[in-house]
Amino acid sequence: MLARQDSPDAEVPRIMIGYWHSVIREFLLPAIVSGEQSWIGGKTEPYHLPDPAETIAAYTDDNRAIQAWAMGRAESPPDYEPDSFSQLSEEGRETMSMLVIGASAWFRGMERTNTLTALNDALLAISLGEEPPPDPVTGQPFLWDSATRTLSAPEGVSEIDPVTLP
Image 1 (cartoon, helix red, strand yellow):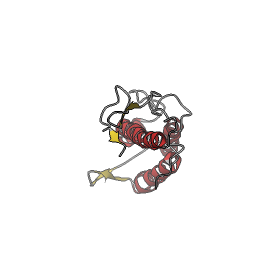
Image 2: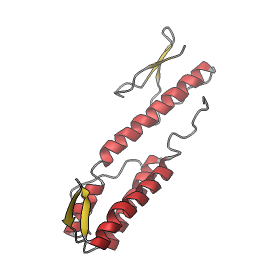
Image 3: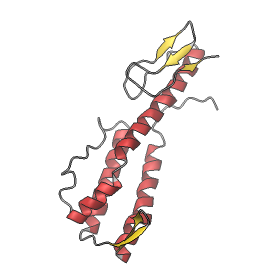
Image 4: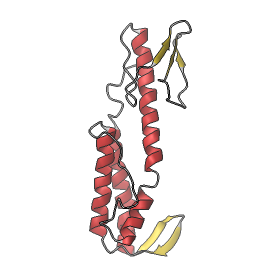
């Protein structure tokens, strides 16, 4: 239960592959095959995607880019500019904008999870007399108050409550 996690992102590839699979199988392929778009608000609307293979390839590339960033192989997450998917048809761009709409919130949540995991690992390291790892998101050290035995996130990291060593 107390085992430290060597890599806060160890599960990201599995999660992202599962997410890709679910989106393709549950949303895109049925819409492409049936010509109906029922995945937005439960409405059934006509759906025509003139470039399904290109849209699926763009979504796959985007999923890989998220994985690369999450695993530290890219310096930043994908940046969704208005022309990010300019190679796609208008319908393809619209579909991609729906698929990536929550990506920035997902990135923030993943970074928060990584900081929380590392914060607990750092507290465990301190209790064992070891050097605590830094925050994997900012690269900054956690803030240790030996008088109160409280460990806090680095300066500027919000929404992370401090933890206290009993």
